[in-house]
Image (cartoon, one colour):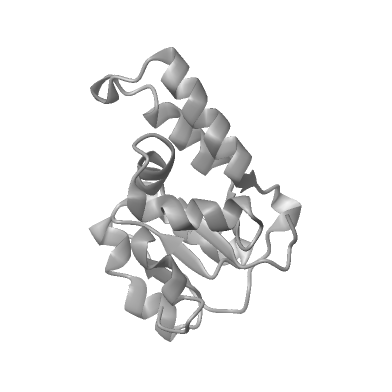
Amino acid sequence: MSPGLPRYVLDTNVCLDAFVFDDPQCASLLMAARIGEIELVTRDDCRAEWLAVLTYPQLKLSQERRAQAVQAFDTCVRCLCPSDMTVHGDAVLPRCSDRDDQKFLELAHQSGAVALLTRDDALLRLARRTKREGLFAILPPALWREVESGLG
């Protein structure tokens, strides 16, 4: 994957939708990543949360299904190392009311992502602020193409 591609960050719930539940709203996003139109990115702590969530008993995932989800994730999502990330500009990131989600804002900012894709209300409430600051869009996954069209 090329560093010149538009980067997108997926929060853990969107990863579940895309890689476990095969949500049709994520299909075009995953296809774009697979054919190299965009780059989906993560970092170690976000990937660790993803792996932990896959073991939650309420998901009732077999070991085989977990392995398939991890494989699909690792095929489509690039785990960035610290040297792949820098702070872009001098804007201050907003604070998410859910401290566990702050890492996704940080990743989007540090990776130079065009958007953070989420269905989480606490993150979506920050969308106007990150847009106003010229940082990145925060959108539900079904609207990911709006960033390309300038609507995000």
